[in-house]
Length: 258
Image 1 (tube, one colour):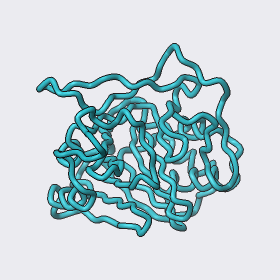
Image 2: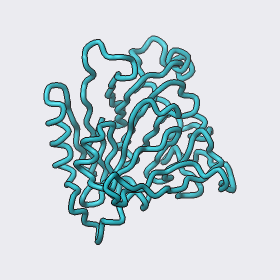
Image 3: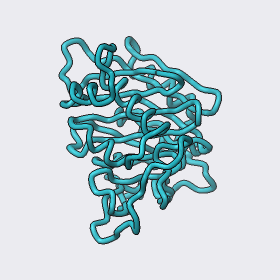
Image 4: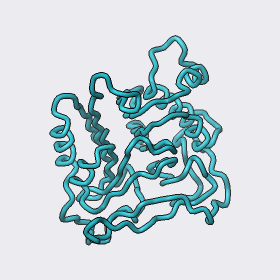
């Protein structure tokens, strides 16, 4: 899995940048097209990608034969909404019934897109509650090309590895391939926090503990160099009000941005 979004599409936390990055230029980081190329080189026989005019690119590598459910990799696009999904949902069957997908060809990626579209267009429910209803081990990234929004989430158990970082010109990079992230983002990367979701406008929040704010923790590599911060739930800091879904333009227009 690889997703790259320019600054105009996604606004990651500032602390994700390494303190060694000055003036927005990261000497050890790469340009988005180089990162995408490295991903294809790492997965030469079973990878594909799609690029969009708004400054987005998504790529996926096929799962190996006889892979475990946690290694399942899916890609799907419906009405200009695209999802790359890794892992599994244990309650997929019940969610298919809940979202009215019975009788249709459905998998986890299709289900996640349908949940996103329902919330974006007509759902009155908090986004954190909808993501919390997804039971299993998973990581996914959604790109809505119609409205130019990005949404990503990682299950609380953390069994699926997921990382994010900042490319040389400031794009946010999300991938489950740590070598691609390290090679593309230099020191400006960190593990994506389990049990959390990120929206291009609403920022990073916990869907398991939505009333708590997130805090950045300093991260130092094996050489003693400061890297992009790791984020975790701040057990002492609360959000003043429960964020709820707003208008049709945005399925997670959270009131307080981090």
